[in-house]
Length: 234
Length: 127
Image (cartoon, rainbow over all chains, first blue to last red; front, side):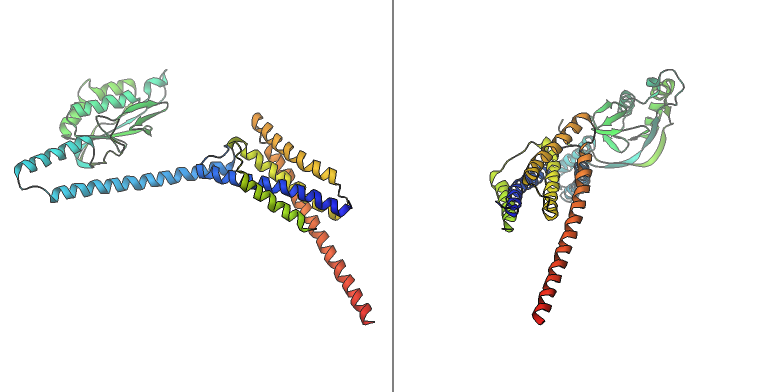
């Protein structure tokens, strides 16, 4: 075989292998991208994951907006179909009340606002001066006990089925991770609520004793609390 | 004769499409590095053939060892937590560009030679 023939023969062999590898890799990348799994570590993967996260966040936001508008629509239809008979009206009124408790509708009304923050370092134990999950839980329980109709922490509605849990350095409310400062708002009789919290030796006093920075309950005329947006099961 | 490598490439692509081979996801990045090495070797081979220094044994062994070593290097780097695949990317990438530049020059020289030869032929005809 002459030199030229050799060049062409070996190039052909190599071209077959190269073509095969290219196709396999191309298919692989395509399939992996479709599944959303690629070998981790490369920047392309990270970018892809970030994009997916953004997309999910956006679709999440859209879905929440849709949910809010749909609930409003349902409420409107109910008002339209408000029955003529007393029993239907009574039922509907009761349903509206239950809806508030179940957190299905955004509510607004007079209430109070308290801000909790971690204390400043200076004591011996940092653990002592942090706003913990139980701090928030106690506060929320106190508010409900005092007759609050709706409570929210940093704009996340707290219900009977809500969870307020410790998640390392943050507190998770309904699965949303929140950090200090926590703004707790409650709708109800402002005088009753604030006096329930500010009572001598009461819950806010106890928190201040621990070293937390707690604002005095501010009375607000119109507090808006959003609807509960997580799934109601669980 | 010159179309044989192109045909080979087409055959390889067809094989890849037909056989439906799946490589574990963790090895995808190694395959990419291996492809880069293979591309570098092919371009290097073309350059060598233009330089008249082509050796089919060196070329063929280089193709397969480069591919495997590049993948192995990336694997070792992954195990050590060092981005060794970057070394392969840089080395092969730089060489790829250099070889392509050399090939380009060779092609220009060939074209000029041919043109000169044609002019010589035409002046000979005219005379």
